[in-house]
Length: 434
Image (cartoon, rainbow, N blue to C red; front, side):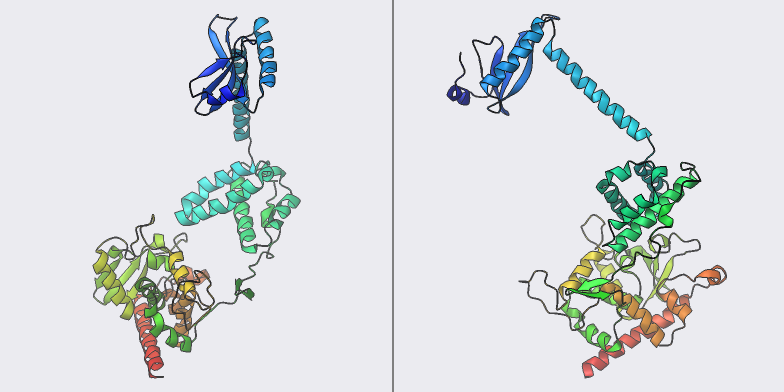
């Protein structure tokens, strides 16, 4: 049968036709398309075999005939085309595998990073921090494969400088890359995988030159200044909080009444809250605190007073066990970014979801973490001793004081958070009078 395009188009999957002038040349149809094949008896073992030549209509009948002639001549010479192709594929796979094994056995920047990450980061950092570190550095290695494949001993000062320069417009990210790669090189020296003479350029270049530009708001650079709400702003904000959802209102109040971190608040669990002789306490396990990696760090005991206590008791009654701020998400609790986004939505300059009608905040240009800083500032304004104020917000004493002063400040925390609660209530009362 001679080739006919119309007939070829009408063939159904499972059908085929042969070209009468080209013995063994067939056009076969499957659900994936139409394919030229050569069907023949092997000169090696006399078994029927078939090899693919190409697809139709991509390969024309004339081109298929040319390729068929090559395969037919090879068969006539005693070669089996299918066996030869199979052997070629196996050789190719073997070559790829050999290259992979050789690359894996070669010590590279990527393998040094993997050794440092598995040996130090995963063992000493919380999962969230470790995952973020992995994402940050491995993105750099993926974006710069030539650098990732280098022998660490051959990374010159210029190579290190050029890599950091590639991220100079995001200085915080560049500083993080510099810090992590510097730690990886130190780990390589400690492990004996890097010769002591190999310099750690990451500890030497761009030192002190990778600083944050600060935030941009409404198209303007606002720098790195830290936001603290004034007493007048606190008095305005507190009565307005019921305009938020109950979730956001509760979290904002806990920020202000406890001065703890957002991650600690949202990871609070029912069993961490206890009623003791001197009142209600929320004990944050050391593993959940930011100081968990430091020697001498302990659980952080937070007295629950005023509105903070009322919120925690109400939420515990609702959930009974597990996370106080439970959520069906993967972590099991509400995420910090969720609350931050809801606060942002209420800022007068927020353009997210422009069609969504909502009451706008009377106090602007703040984030939830600024409330923790605000609480610390208000404690000082009320006359709280710096050591006590630092203990309230969960900071550990620095230097020699941290070694010898092991007082836990539980009574002082309760005293001053009670005074802070009363101070906030008074600011609310004055705002309502005015």
